[in-house]
Length: 280
Image 1 (cartoon, rainbow, N blue to C red):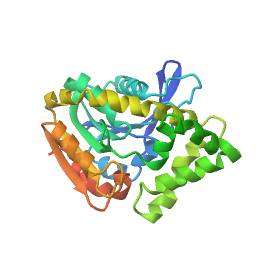
Image 2: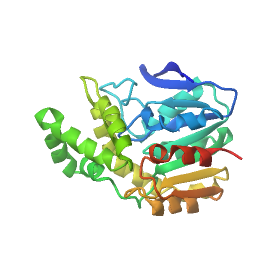
Image 3: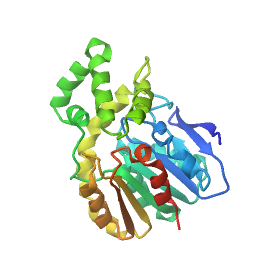
Image 4: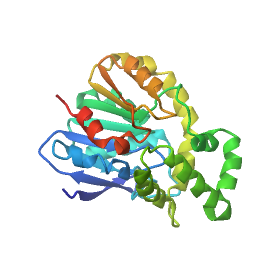
């Protein structure tokens, strides 16, 4: 099934979205960083027989606009999500979050419980406790990040590319999948208008958002809707301990740990992830 392409207005900029239309429950798939909608390419064939699926790129990423003067932070990601939901006039939906899309997805779900059929969390984070990937630590830690960015941008971004490809390689278990997805995901950092500004800016907001979310954890005890927590257990960063914390956080959650999958669980085990995501 081929999707229809949509460009959704957001403060004068365009969010790129794809709609796989079907008379079925609606599902939105959210990417994290530093990736984009291609993260779900392997998973989509297993979801499309059962769901109306929407994928999109946050502003600054993938095929969406990458404006210079835009607040690339977790609040803007939540606003992007809200614009996508309003554009497609979704009254009820399954919200799927991975990695950095976890905080905005959870916050949106808490504020719009009447619209959420189920929340699905794939190797994501919310509060303190996760281990930052090495490249993310370099670019998000105050003072360290200033030096790291100068070095990374040197030699026409040669170091940045090497670091990016090495880090993404640690997120995927299968070598063939690494060879396929590392160039595909890195391509958004090439050209005059690329995702580097969004990447660095979101790193700036990483520590503050974790601190803010840690202070709000108790709110989730009141979230009485279904939550599926599906984590790749080989993930060295957002590991099984993080998944178990999520399970304790949400009273109506179900926890699944996939022993052979890493951080990009939807690439490593797409068939199993899709099976676990299905309602009923």
